[in-house]
Length: 85
Image (tube, rainbow, N blue to C red; front, side, top):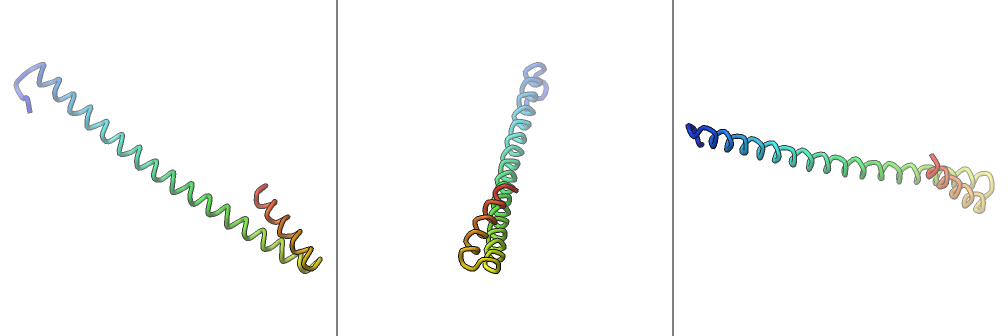
């Protein structure tokens, strides 16, 4: 680019390298942010799945033990356990 200009050439080259490093850093940060958002979404989906599973299992056990009232109580217990664990 500015070959042969001595100090000015060196300064321009340093500026060019710094700009390239900042661009790469920004790209990496964006990539990491997207990956973190994907992991957060997967975690939320897993938590909802666990809540649904424990709620339905509690309702099933409650229905066998105590009929409709037992099912309601079991569902509530299952949901609460899913939030605790």
